[in-house]
Image 1 (cartoon, rainbow, N blue to C red):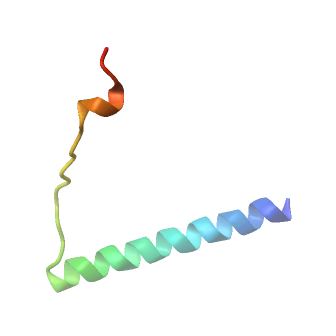
Image 2: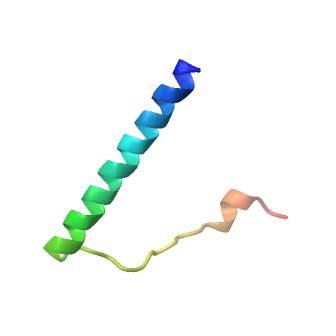
Image 3: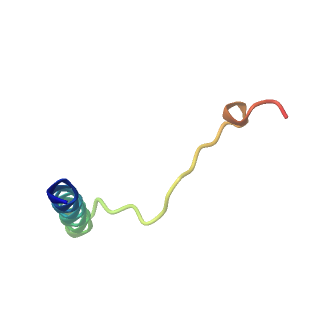
Length: 47
């Protein structure tokens, strides 16, 4: 059970770092409020 507990802490710390990074970007004006998704149909095969 300890292994799962450590994984939970790692996940939580990673998420906290992500939130801090996003808040910093927003404060600095580097915030992008939309996502650009680039897809290539080749990855889905030629069905």
